[in-house]
Figure 1 (cartoon, one colour):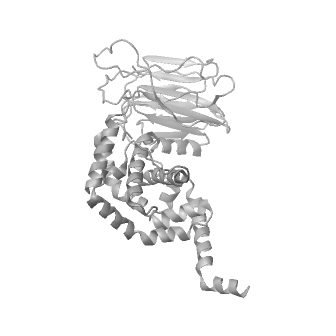
Figure 2 (cartoon, chains in turn purple, yellow):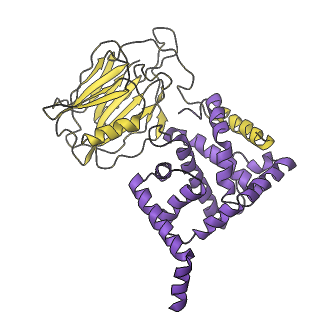
Figure 3 (tube, helix red, strand yellow):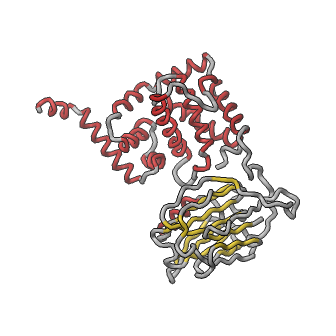
Length: 181
Length: 215
């Protein structure tokens, strides 16, 4: 793929995926300025790692979600250490008041998804990652496996475990049993 | 798209424009010279285990991997696309493989790993037939379970059936490092057709492997 060499190819790629990327971001952060920065950072990271895209190894969106996951988790780590995000393209500076309002709407629309993600927080990382991509980002299991670069059967097993763990936490009988004990 | 999305697109396109120029970015009309005009075989050429020839092909599918009765494996690549599928096919035939198809003028930084014992030696021959594909044979037991066949091809990615400008095949012992893309040095002197030279020289005489260039 020559995304980082061919502006026309990149533009087509961008238009195909910009909404999915913004949705991915606002399901994970609730600050509109940060969401704009992360959206820019994800596409920059995609340009920087365009040579790692392999058409046969999962879909384009799976590859892009893999990039997006890395960018968002790097941001989470960074936010502990440094408040200021430095990037070649500062997404927040590209927003006018209308854009800001629209970003806030996008963030509000995904409120439930962010709550669901919060509920998954205590799951083991490997299981949470699969459930997150399937339940929150609506990927198929095979796409989620491609994002995480794991085998489909592994993804299925982790998904099963994650769902079972969540059911145990959420189901009334589990709460009752805990109350009895 | 919203204003933000349009502005971001412009900013990202500016970023693309400001990137350092990498060789091979502009589509170059290459003369259809035959693979085999320059062949560099490095390492001691002793065991005749891998042979490369060019065949007249170009039809689908992109490649074929045939297990022969004598236990050898014949690999025939007619189009340089779907590298991971070729890897998977080779792996199912019992050969660990790492295949990278890169644009003209780019290659993977070497070394990719430890060369196989004995200098990764194999003898190679390159035919002079027309067509864009290559075929090579892996003798039985040539690539052991702890070794990986590393194939790196530079070609015009918009025209996967065109012959490659550069091809590098080697056997690596143990782990293979991921491909770190670097630009290849361009040969000096004008191309015979008067166009920008797209052929490149690879192989430094130290690394075990086979390099073919089609400049």
